Amino acid sequence: MLVLFDIDGTLYHGDGTGRAAFIDAGRELFGDQFADHDLVLSGRLDPWIFARFMELNGLAMTPEIDEAFRAACHRHLRLRIESAQHRVIALPGTIELVQRLSELPEITLGLLTGNWEANGRLKVESIGFDSQQFRICAWGNDGPTRNDLPPVARRRYVDTFRRDIAYERVVIVGDTVHDVACAMAHNCRCLAVCTGGSTEAELRDAGATTIMTDLSDSAAVVDWLVGAEPSVVGARSQM
Ligand SMILES: [Mg+2]
Image 1 (tube, rainbow, N blue to C red):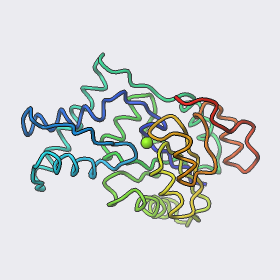
Image 2: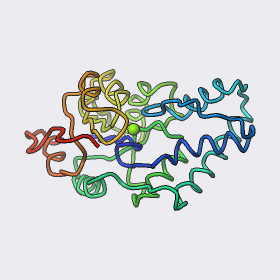
Image 3: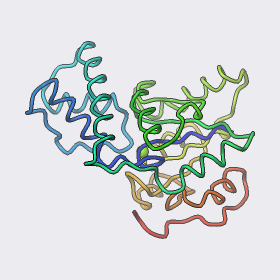
């Protein structure tokens, strides 16, 4: 089984560092008029976010600008994460859950995230994970939309282990309707959590059938993953 975790709002709470890094990078490259425009970022891919910010600010994209922006955004993200202004944390139970899953030989851990690879690795490492323990990863720059990422992860699984894996054996763990949609698009299993960008009602409306308040009950998550009825599933409260 391949378990693919989203990062922002699922494993990691960035306390605004991601958005701030985009704006910091935009202002460094284009001046202080580079504006936020209240763009909703949850569940979106970094290249999409960057392209929308450029469009909203009336700026043209070139390969050179793309490369310079990615480098600046990564540098500012690190500064923001390290700054005392923000409180970057691992979301409840995630460290323990990943540890438990890493001890199960039938489970391969991975990431499926909208982050550019460098930013994604920085985020998970900033909260105490070794990013190498996520052996199969699909990043925000691996496809035009999130729905294109599960096939990327599957192809990498085949390349790594020299055997195929059915989508029914792939689990997407995520916090937004976009995570749910990308799982449904490929008949992957989906565990939706209410620790980030979408409410329980939004996740349910998007088609999520298993929704947990957070990942703090790692025994329930493991039970659900391996097929038994979870002992506790449900949204007791919204964060
Ligand atoms: Mg997310």
